Length: 162
Image (cartoon, rainbow, N blue to C red; front, side, top):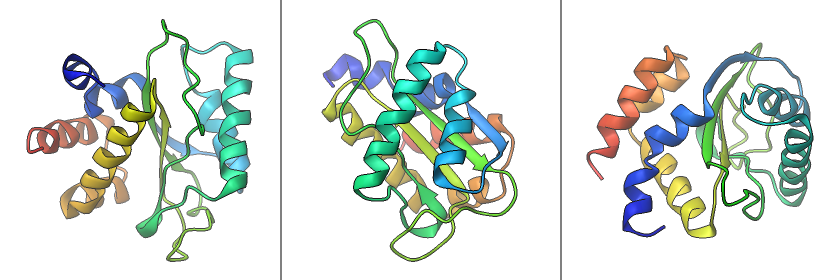
């Protein structure tokens, strides 16, 4: 991202664009990812299917499950057309946390689906999410599945610190 991109695509904006979804059904990574992608408002069915395919291909290489119940699914390479907007969708599985093959064997309670325009933007977003999840207050918010407005406000507040 160039300087203007970093201002234009704040993490708070990317999450606002992607949405925050509660009680996403599914018992497996594939079911949960299918249901998250199905909820994307501005995507045509064929584009959703393509996104699901590349995200599942990435998961097949190695799980995107992180420690402390967080997963960061994403395509291996950027797949957006020049006129498409990047986004981060946050999702909370419905019943029990999901098995995502995390390094610490934790079950996943929060999923950040990342769709970016470039490898540089992707790395920046991953870094930002890592920064957020290291803050105990933010981690408590997502663990408690607080309303969307509180999550966005917390992201904006923490972004101002970096």
